Length: 232
Ligand SMILES: Nc1ncnc2c1ncn2[C@@H]1O[C@H](COP(=O)(O)OP(=O)(O)OP(=O)(O)O)[C@@H](O)[C@H]1O
Image 1 (tube, rainbow, N blue to C red):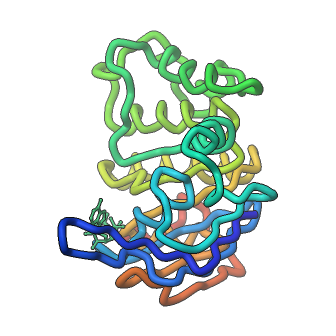
Image 2: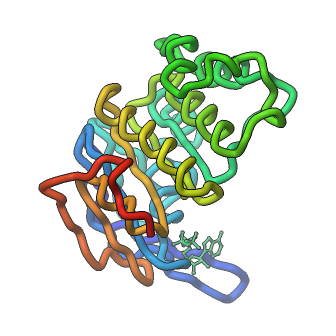
Image 3: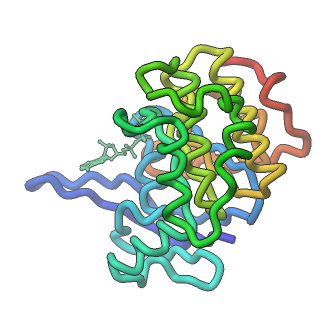
């Protein structure tokens, strides 16, 4: 479980201060599928960055199970990220000189308890592409490799920042189906940032942000599967 208590984040650029997060209070349950929605500049990426330790808070506390993330040193935070957190971004960030298999292996090598790469290749439908290089794949296929890479190290939570932002509807739904499976079958907590309101139909919990604040928290009693969401 992640507890976020009274978190504020102020960016200072010269004399200009931007309050990117204002008194955020939030709990993310283990195994939940959480979607964060909000207009550009509302603080979604900043929230994800501070929860995942990619950035520091200005004030407030973030607790992950028994670990108080906001008290960790940068070195401890790096180790925590490596051991527990997976990331998927809009850009696929694959290493161009490595094959599909080798890109996934990079994720597995970070862990003492990795998932089998061949199984992951099968899950993302890329067994036949295992020896291809990223430039030989479509955007959708590349994003599926990055999903497999993030899962390979067997993280307890996967953070996704606009994971379908560069994909058409069909490829997006394939990637979303993988996130769904990762949540249900592999029991990972999944946190997705998106502009696409349709994706919130898949979520257990939907967080709406505006101007650095959480303006609405909704729990979906019934979730739609990735294939059935309304594409927005
Ligand atoms: N490194 C930074 N330095 C200064 N200001 C920043 C920095 N990063 C973000 N901001 C500001 O903080 C606010 C929140 O930005 P953030 O990137 O979290 O929004 P977002 O909701 O993720 O937007 P988008 O959907 O466009 O990615 C914005 O006003 C932004 O300009």
